Length: 102
Image 1 (tube, rainbow, N blue to C red):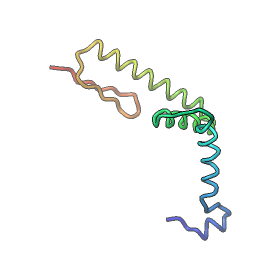
Image 2 (cartoon, rainbow, N blue to C red):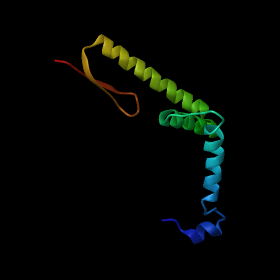
Image 3 (cartoon, one colour):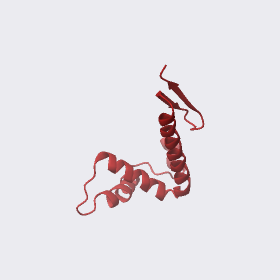
Image 4 (tube, rainbow, N blue to C red):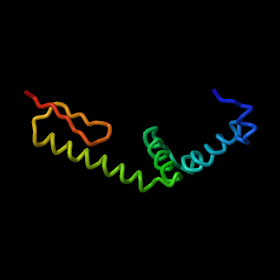
């Protein structure tokens, strides 16, 4: 639970104004431009990339993205080479387990 007195004493903002302002800057300024229409999936993707860019995490994100794409490619190759019914990947993307049709 948040200790409001302590947060106020430390000078932290305790209102929705800062959040609403950030949403206006972060979301509305990009998503509500003239003539733009977004699907839910497209809007989520755009905001995720905007957050990566604003946080200056682009290089880290691109390394992660390329690793994911490499694993997807390797899994696709495994499916082509083996009669595979299921492929499971461990969350750290280093271990691939596949179950063959027997």
